[in-house]
Image (tube, rainbow, N blue to C red; front, side, top):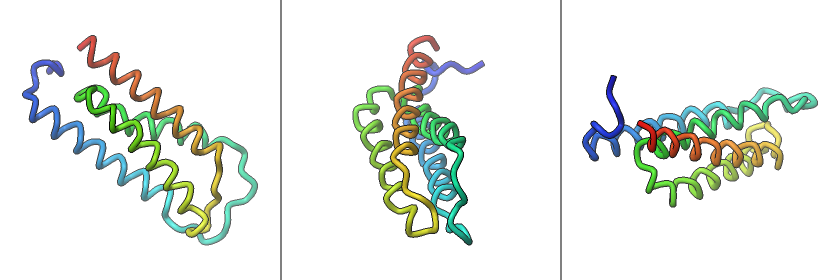
Length: 120
């Protein structure tokens, strides 16, 4: 098994940022693809998906380059806010609760990743 500490710094950097960029692309695609019609009444179940997606977004950087969290956390929060601002333009709804779930996910992913970094 490969430990984080055994990876070269440049490898950790490339892996952290590459995974984060790929996840950001997937999140953007899933949240900004136009819907053919506005969504019906939301049941709130999508908040779990927002939380998981944004926890996953911050996890690679937190695990592999935890010092970069100083800019990654604000960037991830701005990304989540930007998605919510753009969603009405693609037949989706803007929802503060979605952003709050994103923010909770960002913080959880950062905390879990930082713990993984420390103990691996």
